[in-house]
Amino acid sequence: MIHNSKFNIQQAIDLVVIGTVGIDDVDTPFGKVKGVLGGSAVYAASAASFFSRPGIMSIAGKDLPEKFIKYLKKRKIDIEGIEFKGKTFHWEGFYEYDMNEAKTIKTELNSLAEFEAKLPEKYKSAQYLLLGNTDPDIQLEVISQMKSKPFIVLDTMNFWISSKKESLLKVIKKTNLFVLNEGEARQFFDTPNLIKAGKDALLLGPEFVVIKKGEHGALLFSKAGFFSAPGYPLEIVKDPTGAGDSFAGGMIGYLSKTKDVSERNIRRAMIYGSSIASACAESFSLDYIENMKLKNIKERYNALKEIRRF
View 1 (tube, rainbow, N blue to C red):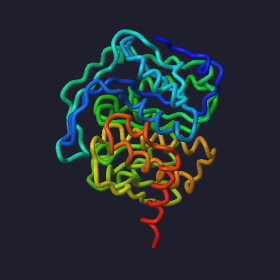
View 2: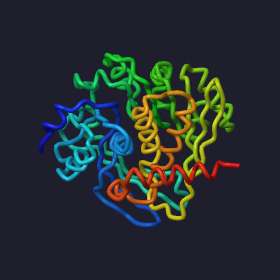
View 3: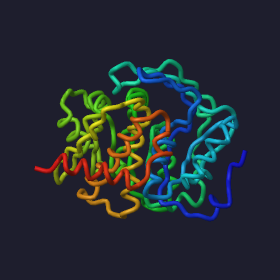
């Protein structure tokens, strides 16, 4: 297996994505797949690659199929930050007709249990950093290794809210944009009200807070105002696995491309993120990437603008 390539060594990256690289088995009412590429870093970097050149920092097993390595390189995703050892993280889960919630059957951490924060030198000067779903202590270590002062987007999950809240609070304080889903927001701030949760989240230090609401879009909170982004209306939802990561990756990818982190541009970035996430949910694994072009994303972006026009 080739871990690095001439492309990876020579080319600079625009943003760093921290998270998991995994192999998934997924069962939904609309089909079943086994042994497909997954992981928060893979979904997020794939979405970001429509706009920018991302680099992944993660760990994967030496058993990761070569076709998955080729996929990442084809998307111009830098893999110098992926360490290869042991066996790849494996997740098996299923969805019932409530496609907003995955139910886990089995999680095998494998090499992920040995994941350490070792940023490649060329990653340390990136101007944008996405802290995808992983241990908050690793996220803190990554931030400390950055030589630049990147715009930081943090995406977390309920497991870390429950098990490492103190470390997570330290990460949030260093974050520019904090992303969480509605269930996590209610859990974190102990309230059924998402508006209250969003405002409370701002008090923890980030400039912006985004609460994802699945098929119903997302909410943006800042000191300057409030924005509600619609979800792209889908008639067919096959597999929402990775849609939230695709949303965050699409957002930071667009911010990196435009080099504009104003609230107005973050609103645009959310619409692009929502457009990509909707496409993700229409297929299994990363199949949507194979069939989607930037022009298709822009078509969905324009459709979402029209939905909100009155």
